Length: 356
Ligand SMILES: *Cc1c(COP(=O)(O)O)cnc(C)c1O
Image 1 (cartoon, rainbow, N blue to C red):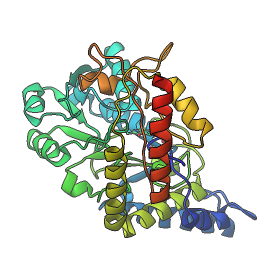
Image 2 (cartoon, rainbow, N blue to C red):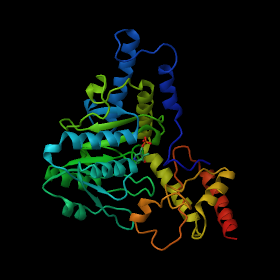
Image 3 (tube, rainbow, N blue to C red):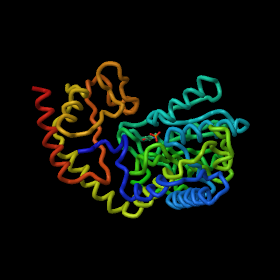
Image 4 (cartoon, rainbow, N blue to C red):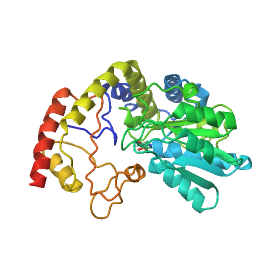
């Protein structure tokens, strides 16, 4: 029972089938000048067009990366570097993924930016009013995620995007958790930059895409060869990008249906968890669940011992004075209704046992 889809997802058959021809036999480097190379380049550019169409972008606006962490680093560091003359104040939220928060904090520590980290409410939501109040004449960039990886909260992205556009501030969206579950349109979201990672929507691990609106200046993170029009040096992961494009198209095709199915499964799961987990050790709970075939996660949450408490739950005010056992159960395309029933059964017995 794999209920850790927020950490990574199973590679879909369709994505794997699309990738196979690009992994067996002679493969050309897309930059070489023979027929193998032309085939590889064609596959790469087809995948670029497919990814672009899935998010309402132009293919020239897509740079392939090694995943979400690289995409966030590239877009944030690159945009800050290339737009230094426009200001050095950056705004983000307290519940961002570490690849955004730690990157911006590192730049702040180096004195490259002045950083404002917006608080969130009890649901983990950023307030557009707070954001409005935080804007300064030298604000150059705002970065807010689409969907949170620990608690699933959706942010008011298009309102934030509208405000940024009015004020001439660049807007970056980490859409890694939303992609494949929500319709993504960079125009509707008012995003200037957006990050995707294939392994969160049943594509392969180690590949992603960074969107930067035409005209947005972003300095490269990886320098070297001329790949990706000088925006990202390194021989392209052709099979990976083809798998990513296929998985994204597959998720987009039955998105509405699949969202309704997962919505009802998750409501059932939430409704079935009647007991609170207060006083239960998350490490023990996870280990016992694992022994019974349930793969879950505590998020990056307040586990005993060396681990830091979750910055997301902390920002939501959920950790104040309480001993908590956060448990993250995240569903996906391959989650079956029977599994939810079994998990609920196992969970109630396991929690009872731990408290007994
Ligand atoms: C997983 C994740 C990332 C990082 O993606 P990788 O491809 O694993 O580097 C970034 N942001 C969010 C919201 C994520 O869930």
